[in-house]
Image 1 (cartoon, rainbow, N blue to C red):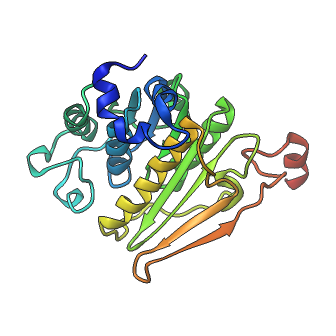
Image 2 (image 1 turned 180 degrees about the vertical axis):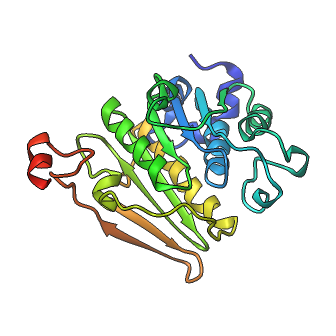
Length: 251
């Protein structure tokens, strides 16, 4: 049940055709697991919080550094040296005190990921490395919950949405590619764009509006200011989402 304050706070989005109070109620009941409180995680967290998501569980093992501040807008100079999840929780609580923020200062691993995600309704990938993304992708498939992928590099970014058992997954796209972890370039506007796209997808999914970025990869080229789209087919032999018999044949 929405309170009088909530009806006023979310008035403009409740006005959207097909959204209404029912859509806002769905947001209020939703639990989101956000992996990462950095460049992508900041806009995702901000816009899910201001939209009135019920619970936002944020996992990140890093502390704020000066070099983060060009893009990780939830963190300020006075937060340097502090845990990113605590810095983020403090800001988000001021954006919207009605949202429950659950900061988790831990490294996401195969051993703890299921427990960290817990009873969340979906997973948002705001990470900066493929190994952890694969862990999240497999977990989403195992739990049967949606997975919202985003990635950035320089002025370029990409996003896609995975519905386990129905659409292509992250591994169908990358085919277990291995990319060495290294420092990469990024301008703050790129994660702002991609993070907002991810937040949009999450809201659409929860409310039940529009068409999701399933079976397609959306690419953003900030230098040319162009969006392009690539069709992604589900791989029956995928090691993450394929059928066991097909996986054996592939090996």
